Image 1 (cartoon, rainbow, N blue to C red):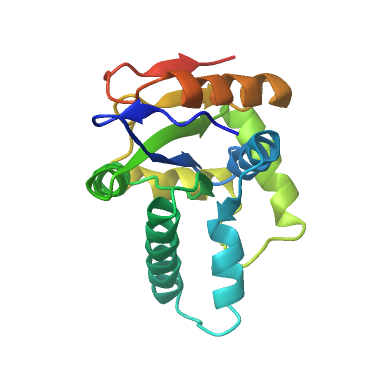
Image 2: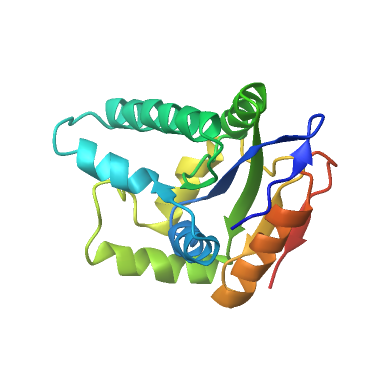
Length: 195
């Protein structure tokens, strides 16, 4: 379990650990391994989306519901002083900055990890998804995804850990666990761990 950081005059904060990145970059794999190591719950956007897709056909409505549920669960988590890992893309930099502000306003602490990988690895992962895509895996072609992401204001959040998910999973989990435990998240230093 994460040792609670004592900040804001000695108050303990609930940690929201965001594992974010483009589709197929290894977010879910990293989030699951991290949750297991730290013995904390992992909330996956895909789980919510895939369930909602059985009842709601419009993609925009599905996404809106996912984010409404996310914020309600985060509020409960923060109020209860419970740490949580969230596996949500948050590729729009404006959206992740808004999340960070919201968490701080609600007296929580955000630790964000951006998952990346080289294009050839990304393409391999997406090709595997083509065999049996889930409802939230609408685009499985790397060129189509690149076109999708070019429309967004993407980038690295201040103080965020950037990792190359082609690295060994156990190493990444240790790295992220140390980042969560020892970084204060407000120093403005972005750390990049790339292969």
